[in-house]
Image (cartoon, rainbow, N blue to C red; front, side):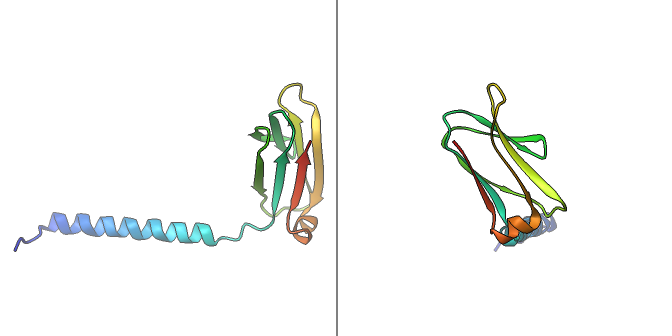
Length: 111
């Protein structure tokens, strides 16, 4: 029977601790309640840019649907979807946190 050195034991404990930390982080991440989301369906034939309160946050290819989790906010929040080429506004929606919660999220369809 082989005895383990203190170095082997420390390494095994460190590996076990890392595995436990990763497991806990994954559990917490999946258990978090993100709240209601804004769902954007890009039914257009073009690549679009998603703006939140005037700031570009994402690109979406044609035919893609994506959800955006919005942290709780005061006042109103604006999602605007513009064509990548030319920059014309294809859809825009302003809403309050209460409207987002009442509707269990909002869907914006870009046509």
